[in-house]
Length: 260
Image 1 (cartoon, rainbow, N blue to C red):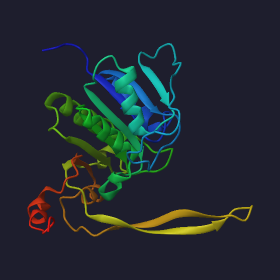
Image 2 (cartoon, rainbow, N blue to C red; image 1 turned 135 degrees about the vertical axis):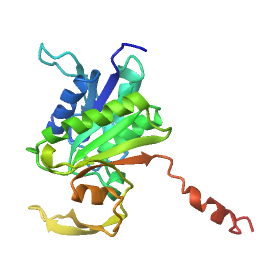
Image 3 (cartoon, helix red, strand yellow; image 1 turned 135 degrees about the horizontal axis):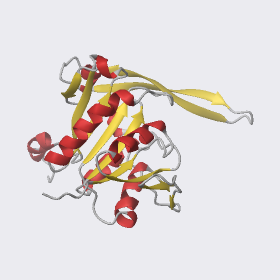
Image 4 (cartoon, rainbow, N blue to C red; image 1 turned 90 degrees about the vertical axis):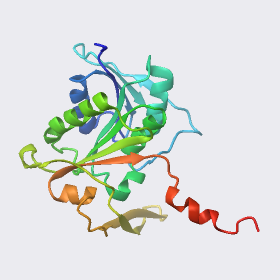
């Protein structure tokens, strides 16, 4: 067995200075050799966007003398960060990519908008085991300490066991103290949606603009979902696949008269 420490790529969507990623870096340094490539500013809700029509910058940061890892601040999206890390920065394919810890939940339908999870998915498409971590607390002063032992457990299990091909993990934490968290629950994604509206406003120059608002509606009453787990004091762990083919509909669609 190799005694080489695992190489871990750390990224996020809240920006490289966000408290969540600083806590995740601290945890990962106890497990392996860490390289950080993260956005230079918040990129929440960017989904899997990539930079195509603008310059992409990725600058090394000057860390404190006692720090023993490297960090790069990237002008692009979370997916950009993973791409440029693999192609331009890392000397070998990392053993793991972790993204987060996001300030706010990425459970249920939120996963498709999430820059945090898109970074993990981008790593997964490159054959890198990946995990996205999120905490159900949007505050910049959120307490990430209760997540520590659970992140260590999940990370070590992924490094030891690997992940099925085409799968990454979406992990969400309830806003609770460690002693109040009941454990980790493997779940499915809850069926839910947003009822959205745009708040129309006018700027001082008289130009109309819009602010997106909405209400999250969970229509799923199952007790095997991420939403149920979070509301009942568990860490939710959902295996996410990035093959978007609806395989169960292929037979039905092949019965259509498409070529008539």
